[in-house]
Length: 193
Image (cartoon, rainbow, N blue to C red):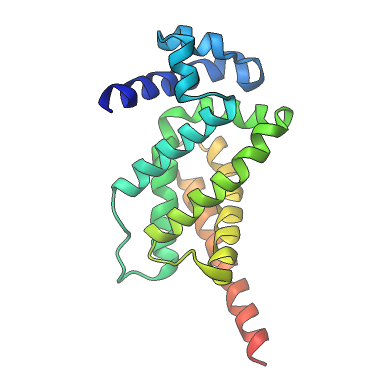
């Protein structure tokens, strides 16, 4: 198992190294395996499609965030969500250029984009769980969609935030969370009438 994980990491690291150079659309599996120094058949066994590479990158980030454990349940919900989402940006930070290149290339790869939608929703569900919020049922589905919108809106700011303290990213995230909180409160009040 350790060898499989090591090989997977080498392949994913190769993607992150090459994506800023070639772009996502120009990146071939042959280039990736050459950079990772693995054979095509081994790479195929681990990542049979480019979409599976994206899923592997997403899973790796999820694991880094979740390894830090749950957010403090004594904190307000907005603070817990803020912490978990910022952990995610911290995990992505060393690979900002690669993430930007991949995101720029996804519109030209609609199959990968469509394939990633449920995986991304699952990722957001786990982020909710890390923040101590259930992702189950109708309420959970609404939370997943809401967090996804918050995350994607903040991601746009993060991509251009080259400051060490990520001040613009934190400000955008805080603003997006406050907006979502107001909307949720307004929607709840509407249904109580």
